[in-house]
Image (cartoon, rainbow, N blue to C red; front, top):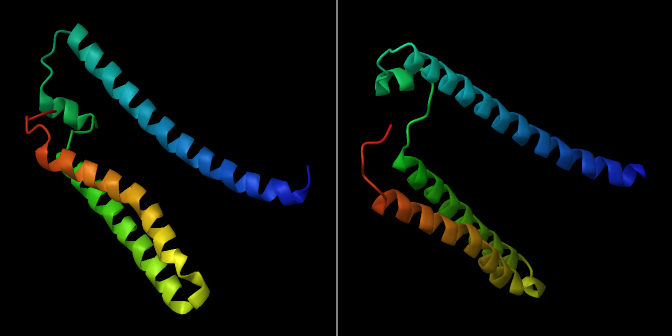
Length: 127
């Protein structure tokens, strides 16, 4: 393998490794918290939602869907603005606006769905 291939592969491998480390760390933390809760139940102690939150278990939050949806919509608008800007700079790049609008559809529609989940999702008082 040449250096021309190793450098891009190394960059992609680094991104994959960072994501793996972050996800694995969160998983290990949740496993430790759940084993602590299991030991408390075996010992006959009362397990309250406050105790579970104190152990670091995340609370379900519908605002997370709203925030993620708003960020994805902002990314979609940024793609559209980028396409408009590129098409305004060069007369030969008029199709850039159409292409970037098509690309913007992916994060835009996902953002709309997430915002719908956040607005119309279950309003139960979850852990």
